[in-house]
Image 1 (tube, rainbow, N blue to C red):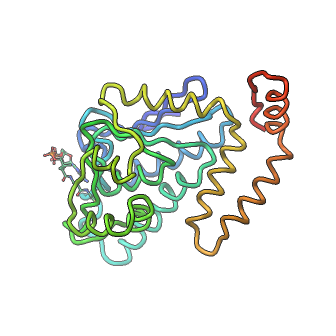
Image 2 (image 1 turned 30 degrees about the vertical axis):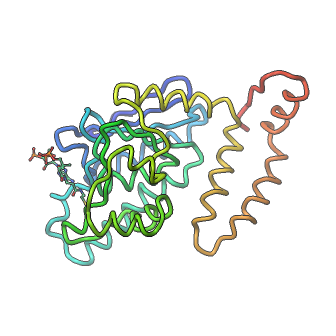
Length: 260
Ligand code: COA
């Protein structure tokens, strides 16, 4: 499918989604959010896609935030709608995909950019990356899940400080905070993410999807994550992947998972 603001590539089960507005530091305008929604939905529905990497085009930015020029004149209702729709179309969608999503943070990840990276299942940063939620410097607060996901990842006190100061942290600080899992030189970022993807792809995609669901349940209001785990664990026993995984182990060979 052809998009205007993003590029999607598919190679051997690995999809790479590149946000491609480098002249605007890949800022998320409405059209880009819609295109990302379509792309993530389609890739998740494609059983040949085992892992998705999301990154930004150019060497400067992952995503420098929501497109400020689009909401500068909004009123209260428009502001609420912007946040609610964005969360539904993109940020909650990405968090709840059954296909693993790795954010390859290749430069500035600010505001909605960091919120997108945080909605991904985990993050790898290039050594030049800078991350922050600078919304209060514009007179607003993070609206795409940042006030919820940042404390989940870095702890309440650090999230409070980052959001109140509107400051940026560098890649090494982000790693020390637990915001990103790895920091690598920029030229190696995609290959490094691909090597993690290759490890993921050897495993059962069905089981991985259920594990994502169970982990996310811990962060969902009114849901008992332990109960979700018990259900998903039990249902794993009814999958072809489980039969193949256990049979391969007993036959001392590598499993070839059918993904069902
Ligand atoms: N929304 C809209 N446009 C943005 C943008 C955003 N969030 N971030 C960057 N851009 C645009 C700039 O307006 C500029 O466009 P122009 O060339 O047409 O003027 C272009 O991207 C390049 O950005 P520029 O500011 O010139 O680059 P810089 O290297 O001097 O600064 C940043 C980089 C990231 C520090 C700076 O762009 C910035 O602070 N961006 C906004 C970050 C932010 O507040 N995000 C949260 C939004 S809720």
